[in-house]
Image (cartoon, rainbow, N blue to C red):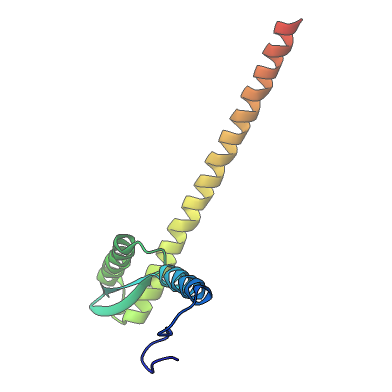
Length: 131
């Protein structure tokens, strides 16, 4: 019989123990996947943000980056509206991300080309060595 404040039975069988263990494991996975909540301050506003990857320090760094970008933009923008500043900051950050992705793809392609070139050279050396 369940007590009103508990989800566990008072007299559990071996099967019940297995169910309880599965439920505990699922609860842990759910907590881990939801992440830990952390309060961040961005442009004089406090937000409760869930660190979905569990990395609170990273979430704090990202929030600080957004705050810094909004403050930089506010110095030269014709508006002090925080929503507009947030949109401008998002556009600046998205631009940086796109440039970084493009650079990554270029470097990855160069690495792939070089790897293929060296593999072909090695194949040729092995073929020449065998003959």
